[in-house]
Length: 187
Image (cartoon, rainbow, N blue to C red; front, side):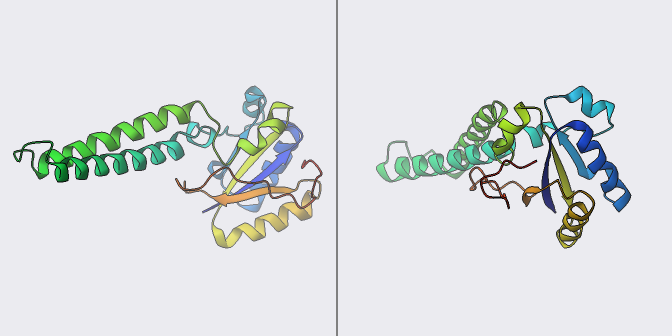
């Protein structure tokens, strides 16, 4: 799946876009809105972005799990080769230690992620804070181009502000804005 990001000036403009997407055949659960005006989203029957789309819990949780796994693996290898623990500390104990470190890393990464906007939408935080509405459209990869063309044709004032995969990549950082207008704020 591919996620398309459209930035509109208000929830009312987002409502017009969402209604056209429904008419085009995009399911209502594949369209989400992110705005400071959650009541406006509710009033216009736009599903708000869910917890995992809004915050960086999964992304940083995965990073924490990877860091915990690597640290525990290095620790286990170091302890094994330096003979710091008696020989009775076997494979099962080592695997348990690696599991605990990995889970602790995932937990601590997730705690940090709860306090941050999702790494894919953080680039839009200024616009959202100033009253804009971000519309997230999830679509199969082979249909994303058709949907982008339909939106461009019916709503030429909405610019595709970005696109990404719906899957979280723990190795990727904050995404850059894909403005076709170079230096002009996207609406």
